[in-house]
Length: 327
View (cartoon, rainbow, N blue to C red):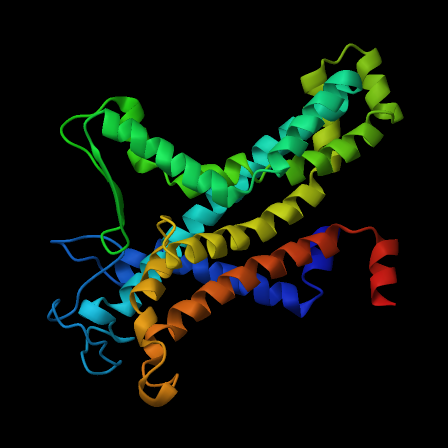
């Protein structure tokens, strides 16, 4: 109760929560808000003549509420279905890094000694490897595996496909075809801050009396970690995970926009309309629907999860820290 009272005492937290609920509702109700094309289902839908290379403004076609991009891709449809993809991607990326990093750091901190040192040096080694390089490496690795199995590797932002397979494929190849390399890369190379954070807290908590009492009564390491250490150390990691939801989606959209092979619907739409951002005479408003709706969605999504993360951190902070912040 105290947590919720603190959380809802700030209007910024209300705003973040309302925005998150709005994104969640849109992602769940996407089939109702903007039904997919039965002949070509997906996050992209063509309205009108698909060979027309000129974007059409809102209102010119009743079906295209927010206008169309070159070759008549519906902005509204991709905005709605891109919200569902963003929610799925952001939550999966943050949850994967959170779960692995928390347990890795807790086990290392509880073990202590040489094992703790070794595990933390492994985390430090992973910190030197950027997620962007990991994305390129995993994508190329998957492409090599699929090519060796008789498939073909390609990337097409509009069709949203990365791989084309010939015939029935082995389970491993089928899995590689369905997994986003950026998602795996973010999980593999974003867990280290969670591990270091939890490790520092667990090292302190393992010396407390209630942990030593549990050990004296014969409690096993995993029981102590699960019952005593994680509940008292996981709050800062939750704050970090909330912020990472938004940053993961922004990174995905950015990589898709610059053509590094990720599969963000929002980023793909921005990429397809990039040549129309600046209109005749340098006027940025001539084709505003090409970039404003999607850009606003990406920015709001990032702000939403930052607000939630800050709100959770403030609500979980000790009273003395909150008073110091107010001063």
